[in-house]
Every structure is written in structure tokens, then in C-alpha cells.
Image 1 (tube, rainbow, N blue to C red):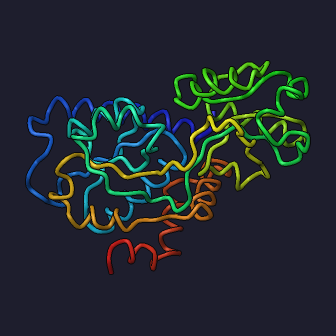
Image 2 (spheres, helix red, strand yellow):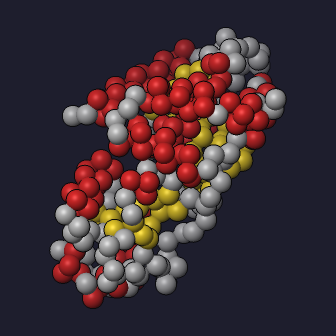
Length: 296
């Protein structure tokens, strides 16, 4: 088991414990006082881009004198904690479609501070660029034997997995099994196939370091089943902007390009570098960006 995976597991455990303590001990989850001693609680899901931007803002805010606490959770309890005021921020909401149900349920208890990712976020079915015979999801039916009838994916409960299982495979009449696993296990299959220049079809998404590491291509979706143009939005609990106006304004100015994000992700999740050291290095190399976000 990799060091990064062990850190993720421990981080998730402590995140759940911290959230439990916050719920148990906080009679008023939205304290009116605006002090730098009151921890800003950033909830995040163990997705590469969420880990990067959450740690990035933890460092930036701590450098400004704020106390920051990261809490790792799954999507559903994260939205619930944000709506209840037990968390302050979530920096990786996929809207308007993938997190649509959560937004419709909790939006009246949340603040939307805008989108930070410069390009549209996208999730789709991908293959290595060297698989020249297949350029569309429809092509998979003809070439299913090439891929042994398997599409490799992530956790079964992910909304995009349900979309592929319930809509993409039936509507394209694909004789394929959707293989549910972890992100790490799926990428391990991609790595092995790529090293052998073997065909493989899998779930890809942008932003992600996989597109920085390998030459990949999304398959065209002529039936337009898979949503396009998702935004990665920053959500806050109700009242956050009033309590922390400077932080809210900084987050509203925050943007990050795919080029920078994917290179940071690659160093942490692919090359195995320490995430704190990588984030610190990036901040030190780009003070003009940080100053711009902070309004200087």
C-alpha cells in the first residue's frame, strides 16, 4: 500500500472523527464572530483536484493567519455537513448536473462563490490515443472483443457510473461489463495497458493528472448522453461571506488552469511526492497568482 493511500485513509478517518466532534460540541454551527482563531472547516472528497485545491487554500489561508481544518468525507455527508453549518467550505462541487440532486436539496442553505476551474470539467469514456480504430462510443460495439467486453470504472456509487450503467450501455447497445473498482485500481489497469500499448476503455475525467501522464482521448458521444460543460464551483455554508468577507472575496477571484492543476496532481498522485511540499513549492513559485486572489 502506497504512502499516499495510507495518508488518505488516515485523513478520512480523522475527518469523520473531527466532524463527529464538531456536531457533538457545537451548539451554534454558525458563530457570528469573525476571528482568525475560529477554524475554517474545508470539507473535501478524496478526488485529486479536491485534494489539491483544498490543501492549496489551507496553506494560503494559514499564511494569512487563519486557522484551517480539512475534513475528508464522502459527497452526501459533506453536503449535509455544509448545509447544517458543521463545515464552512467545499471547493469541488460538480454543477449543474453531477451534483444536481444535492444542490436542489440544500441550495437554500448554501452560498455559491463561483467556479474556479478555467476549462469546462468533463467526465467521459476514454481510450489511449494509439487505439485508432475507436473514436466514438458507438464504435465500441463493433470492437468489443478488442477490449474483452470491459469498461473499467471507479466506485459503483458514483453518479457517472450509474449514468454509464443505466443509460450509455443500454442506449448504445454495448455488449460490455462496467467494472466497478477504485480510482487507483482503474488507473493501475490503464498503466499496465499503456505500457504494453494494449487496448483498454475506461472512465476518464478532466481535470485529472492522467491526461498529463498519458496520451488519451475521449470517445465522441453522438447520442449526447454524457453531460458537457460541468463547472467546479465553490460552495460555502450560509453566512460564511458575512463572517469571512475577505476569504469569500479571495475565493471568488480564484481560478486555476488545467495545465497547472494537472502538473500538481501528477507530482502528488503519480510521482508520489509529498502533497504539502508540492503545494508549498507551487505557492512559492507563483506569488503573483496568490496575491491576485488575495486582492493585492
